[in-house]
Length: 481
Image 1 (cartoon, rainbow, N blue to C red):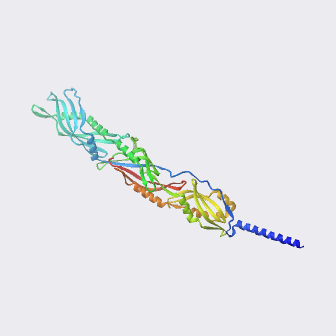
Image 2: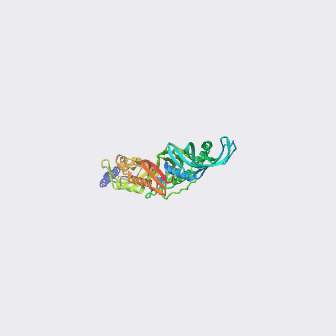
Image 3: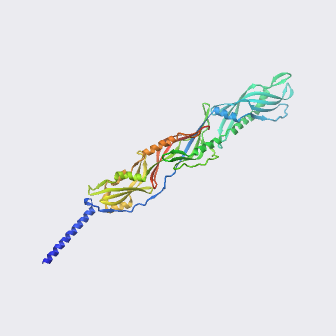
């Protein structure tokens, strides 16, 4: 009897212990009292990157090179190149003594005016001529004449696709300064009509000679090569961020020549690939020839350059950790509690991975993913398509489904917003300043950034890179062009 009683008491005690253990296990599974009940160790997303460092940002741009020529410049250049002899005709054919040979030389400097896209030239000339003629029906042997007159002619000036000057002149008239005469029997007899007739027959040849002199001596192409090589020079955009603008010209454009207030104006447009490069100064090789000219009605203002803002991944993790690490989150009216213990950030191709350490009702690691994007309204980088990593989600669904009903994911996403407005504004200010300054002797940049638009955001092993496309206008002024 005594033995039976002891056995019953022992059985009751064992049953009580079992119930107590079962209840304790049940409490652990429920997370009551803040005890750790769920171990979270999902497989971490693999770390990988599409880019190993900052990429070269390329755009298609047009750089304007305006030029303006005063009539004083035209006069100086023409008089420097049309030095003395303008025209010479050494032939003397017998045609009833009505023959004419001559040498035409520039007497004084040529003057030029411009109006309605037409140049007007006043050319002072002196002429030596040998003329055979008749006086009162009598054949007079050829005599030498010297006389002065001014030729006035108009000219349409244009640039051919091969950059040669094209000149089409037409006569306007001439005026006598010293009329031609011959001395016969001690009397000076004017032969103006005879000489005018001879000059008229030679007028086209004289004008052609003037055109040829202008075309051969007005060297435009060498200035275009200079402009092309000037555009190719790397320009410093930001010393602080070691950012350079590299220009690779691909096409040359030019507007028609126009005359305004006795000045000739046009704009050369260099269509080019504009690249933003970080690091050391890029190199370039000067050219000796340029593509043919393409005539356009206007040069577009479509200069573009990529501004790059950078957020180190370590800084992004620190900023997020400063907000979340040590913070407690309650679920189900306090039935479950978790505390953030660590934050780390890395890349998985085009997505950003956020690893969060937790303690409390969940103990271990969980992972989120999102695609970095730029919000121009707030000038911030944020995460698009933000969600739990699939393997983390599968673990939580099976062990702690209640975790999805809290505000943890929303708080995590909000903390992963990084303002880069200050960096962008500073970069824009530096670019603006460096696009408005002399860069070498006789070469000045004149640019203006008018618009900033989002381009792309990508990850490198060290940073989040946000590219902002800066649009505006860029002209290069070259003295002497």
